[in-house]
Image 1 (cartoon, rainbow, N blue to C red):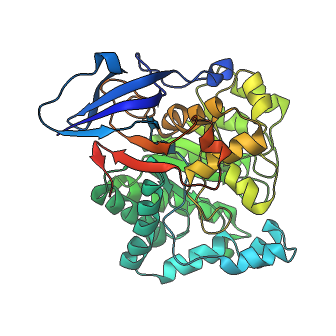
Image 2 (image 1 turned 180 degrees about the horizontal axis):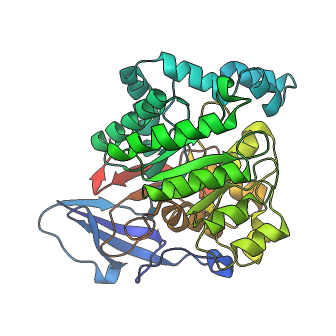
Image 3 (image 1 turned 90 degrees about the vertical axis):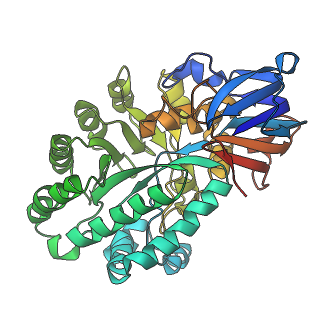
Length: 412
């Protein structure tokens, strides 16, 4: 099946040679072609260029994109979209003055979601989660990482990961699974952290590896959750099973967690609402991608990742949604890109780079996703007619997507 997109006003994120990420000043550069075409063949990007070189195709579909922008689909490298129920009451509690920590201490937060998940049949969790996945696909997300972490029991974690596997089998969107058994300490282990670490390392991990249910391993490295030492044990254990780390860190406090993550070769460090000068120095010249989650900051009114400081220091940065029932009940990457521009002072070029090529790096898929490059998967957003691609973050409340192509197929 061939699809030829013609008369593209702006074709964004074109990379003749595949790159894995962009950093520092290079994040402000977003290569594009005006008045362009793009050819899809066998679900891959086969060719692109200016309209004066546009080929004729005798078979296939032609899409006229006059006045429209085409760019790679969003890559969302940090989500928790497999869960049961909701935490709407906690939303009201925060409005009434309770903090995230106070809600958690009352049995809310992650433990609330864990209770609901363990009480809900696997099929029902799948049916709830697939609706969220379908929604984000329509919003332009063509690749997504999904974490476990609301089971906190052997069977609960396995149940979540099996749901993620089933989603990956049934939908064309690229999905990577992350094991997050170290999301919080269950109530019975609050005073016995070592015993729960033993469950994670010696019971959960072997079964997950045996069923090949995860690509990555994660932990909530934070004051009141998992310490640096505990997280290091989890990262080391994951490595024994071939699971690279992607770690929650520096959401509320900086406790030298980033240094530990870099030392253990973490693919990404995510949240980073609090970033010290020492953290930036550690991240320089590392292979670890910093990931910002601005819609989480928006929803629970905490600081935003200091993007300007980090980019000025030469670092790369990726953007993701953190889609979850408690602190970010949205998987809309369009809003994430807009919020990064409005609240983190990222330029549209930087934000789009962060949500495409750098997001792909943070998922370990930059060889196949995240840019308009020949041979990469045909995952694309076709916008409605725009004055400029700057309109994407500018009109933050509008749906400016006309069509989405995932794995060479138009979504309907």
